[in-house]
Length: 422
Image (cartoon, rainbow, N blue to C red):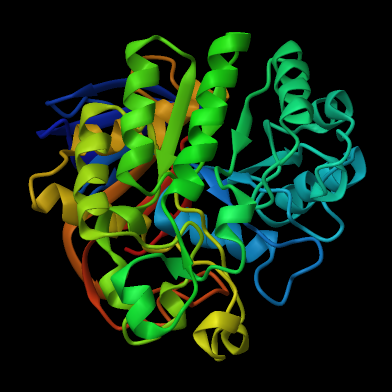
């Protein structure tokens, strides 16, 4: 690869040109270099951002290809700005052995050899049953980036403790879905006045915060990192803030839907709003917004959970949990920028730098020698969320039919364009 110049772009609010050679960043400068042999690419006034990293997705393959495949999930990732995604283990068969991990990586290379890239998350326990540990060393050797029991939290605290210790020995992070399964049993939305009005079984916020407290105390006792998945309520944030003040090695993520929507939108029994953890109170949304700004929450992840249309076309209590998020996450988060809750630097920290740091994945800081993984974002571009506009097979999102502002217009990995809307 020769010299590539991305002209007419903005980086950190400054106009200029980005120089790339052999897939690596050379520099960003204001003036156009005099090199007639360089390949020119017009960025059309877009903003440069590093490729995003999604620490929590469900790509469904193997076993549930009618919902999503690795090929289509990564197409949605490319269009949404995600260069790397961490795929959870709740496939069929479960990703609890090397053969499934290797299958996922092979599917990635067959469909998208230049990227985006899937980083499998191995099952913490065999078949996600919470009874015995998976072969953790085998999973790491096969290519797993982290370990999790995903939506089936390990109830046995002694087993969970051993899993965290063994994972630490392998230099891997355990991601925990924080939920007391007894308190949450059969719940379908947030427990409160609205769940009572709708006649739906509620999930109390203490079901989450109780498990958060367990993980914090274990991380402190073992002095070993634990990552908390999709945090949704104010009480959990108070516990995480306390842990961070004590320098306990806890990190945490939330999702766009917990920053934008509350339980009020469940009133119409719209199954697109059913997700676990459930959409909480307005006060939880406001607390979550403060937490992503202050650093109590480290990461914004999508928890991309695509489903087939017929699966959501049932009574609310019978619908599967999940929102399809790869297509819309960045556009939704840019709304928080417009509202003054976050700025673009915050988004880069939450959606690229921090997930890269926590899970040991490469991040482009636009410094000399960095891999040229970046997106061109038109923050003023308006688009309507329709099934045709979404690249994921999953069209299950509460913002279907809405007009969003801000979109990825092009995506480069290793200096090679892998996606364009120009």
